[in-house]
Length: 284
Image 1 (cartoon, rainbow, N blue to C red):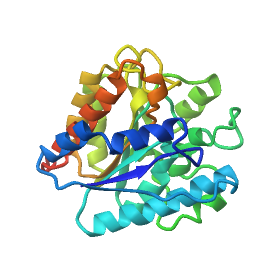
Image 2: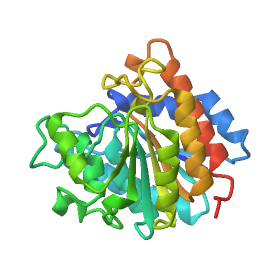
Image 3: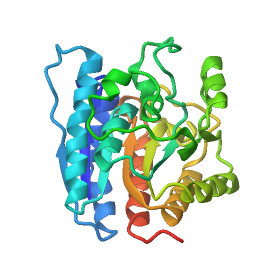
């Protein structure tokens, strides 16, 4: 397994949620737990660029660099586990493993499904899943080698709950299958089984604020009404049993908001669950 650290928030190194990625990649308990599952573990950091470059250009160049390292890891038989500040790292990860037969399992309190014509926050990171499914920023997306749109019907968005009215309407109009709030595990399992009939492999994306705020406060955007950590772990096990996970990411951890250390502990458990699950063969 190769830990690929992308410690950037809005393209700035070790700022906000970018600091969380740096903390996770160096966390000895997280690393020991992965190695305890029989993995030989290596890690590297994706190098940044001149911070005077405009924000969106920085983010996209970091994704290009990430895609190269993900591709190299996969070609050498290593499982890529990306530890990133922002969710739009998904573009580099997906480009690195390739789009053929790819589905997406996305755990997040937020949809990250805005496109430039409707977004009101100006926050580029809330457009990650929209871009991954082929909406918005077409010219920029085409500069990322290997990135092809994932069909909306091949995306499961779990734990989503913190939405503006326009975001909720956009999601409802889409073909993305949302399993919201605390996650109905039976419904989630049916969705995963259905996805397995169309996708030969998946990208597993885990934003730590998918966890209910009462269990862990991963960042300033954390919200109530989500799944407990145990339910999230159960869902990860379901994904790994049913599907071939080609790459995974853990994102959006900001240590400044983790005053009691529970979000760090949750990240360790999530990483260990992924490491345990992807070693076994999916069910047929």
